[in-house]
Length: 325
Image 1 (cartoon, rainbow, N blue to C red):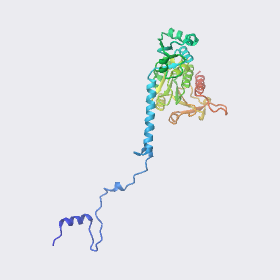
Image 2: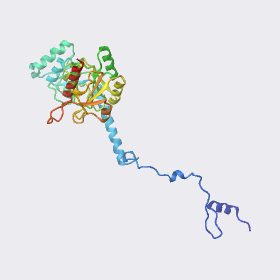
Image 3: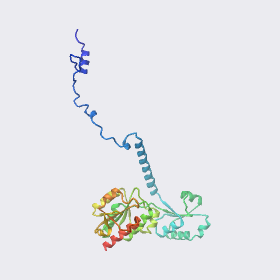
Image 4: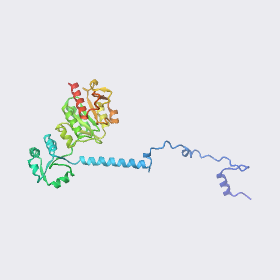
């Protein structure tokens, strides 16, 4: 009786069998399964593994940072309310841009306070609108902060582009001098640096868009009016802005306590220059420091840990002014 063709086909697929009943070698796969036999490489970090708790935590942290940045950006795009009798008077004396002066009505002490009287005169001389509000309404406007019955509405600051500072330098006929601030978060330090930069004929100040203070009313006030004369630019990425300055022929000089050269020994201060200062404590960030052509230090007494960033910037700017005659 002949063999069943169907059974014969199954037998061929399973491989040939020798006369002793042992299975012989079957045809190869032609390399089709080689990929499945290859190693899968190193195990990715937990933050990159789909569904891993570490990845979910990293994603949540990223969302929180994004939300904080968006909230800060929205806050900077709306007018700021500067509160308190001394701050308001100082701001008006410094000619800080303002759009209105708020005064709480029905406060007998306010009518006899010399600071409020001066604020009213200064605002009137500038033609600022005087808006009288009730205490409950002003408490709501100031989110419960101490306001002493007076507030100055300050419009959002109009930042320059980092490249605009090169145009300012070109028009001045002097070698470019720009101060870049890396990660400085205290508005008073920003205002003080702006004041020093204006005093020593710099062409502008650059701050990063993220993780850095902006030109708030407090920074305006500390600058003592210098912010009205000196442009402040905001860079999306400070390291890239410094690279752009390098392409334009500027030396990028970082300032740090552990710099490799004393400020007095650096002979390039008279050249086109971008002076880079960092935050107190953390100093220059890694990427920004790597972008610096040289990092210099200011020699100080050993028992002094560091200089305030605005003081250090002032010392360095004075050295630049001396070198340029």
